[in-house]
Length: 111
Image (cartoon, rainbow, N blue to C red; front, side, top):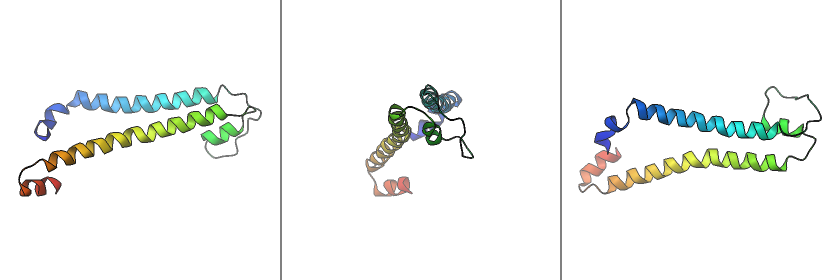
């Protein structure tokens, strides 16, 4: 409903969408941080400029297989969820444009 966009996308909806993105990013990071810092650590020296996940996991005395799987799952979720949302929305937009009866209307919509 492109003509109703300004009514649908009001300040409240925009705030909810932005807040949900921030909250999901925070929760995914929190889950990973809690899982990493429950591991036993042998060494406290990180030889990197920034504290990334892999160097911290390398410092653990135990084998961090669960953390590796968790990192994979979180990464896949963080990448595929927004990509799927975008892909589906573009499919819906294109299918709506293709339903326009006139060729000139479709041309204007794609332009």
